[in-house]
Amino acid sequence: MLSIYAAFLADFLIGDPASWPHPVRLIGAYISFFEKHAIKASKSEPALKAAGVLLLITTVGLAFLSSWYTLKLAGWISPYLYHVLNILLLYTCIAARCLSDEGRRIYLALKEEGLDKGRKLLSMVVGRDTDSLNESGVTRGAVETIAENTSDGVIAPLFYMFIGGAPLAMAYKAVNTLDSMIGYKNERYLHFGRAAALFDDAANYIPARITGILIVLASLLMGLDYKSSLRTLLRDSRNHSSPNSGFPESAVAGALGVQLGGTNHYFGKPVEKPTIGDPLRPLVRKDIKTAIGLMYISSILALILFSIVLNQEGWR
Image (cartoon, rainbow, N blue to C red):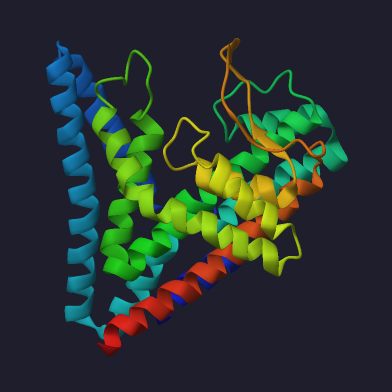
């Protein structure tokens, strides 16, 4: 547990400097290499599905086993080396500071540099078209990204750390990376990425629901509308194409008193999506900072919750 706390603190203080090596980049390189050769060699739908399953198994297996054996070897050399490497591996699995930094950049761009800069920065973290968005639209994209990744990038990794340490957290990051790279329902990835997308949905099923509840509690601690947060969570959590993303997004929407979701444009074409929350007021750029606050408070609550559960299990 102390290693997890240290890793969370390290992420809060340091974040993810672009110049530093990161295991996720190695995972991404392996996925790209496998994809390049597998799609070329697979000539049928069953072959693409089988290649996708093989990629899932090998990526997750390599992430788990490489972390496990690295820590085992480090422990054999020195307990101090083991603890240092363990904290480093755990630290690379947490994305709270990175998420906060991206959100703050968009907020500051809208405040100080203008709408065009805000659109450009948002386009780097979302797949939707951003060129025609107004300030409220840019803010909505940022808030939705922060809300969704509160689960995927912070609380879900913490959940798996407490269950299985750094190896299981790295395995989760491999699943998450696979989904972000090939888990799309387009012509290229519909069959090849199907296994990754389904496994990512399964891996995030419990953490997403925990995240929704913790965001409600965080909104209470922050003096936001926690009753609306809970009401919107219960009502709108399934108003999303993802079986999981609607839980954190609906809790955030209710806490802020805004409406998320709705129509987005992808490659110039409108895509209709259900709305989440009530349009009690338009989104304003300050909502980005509030969403970041909800992310951090709910993450700290997750640390407390998982620690209590782990201690209870240890006492039995």
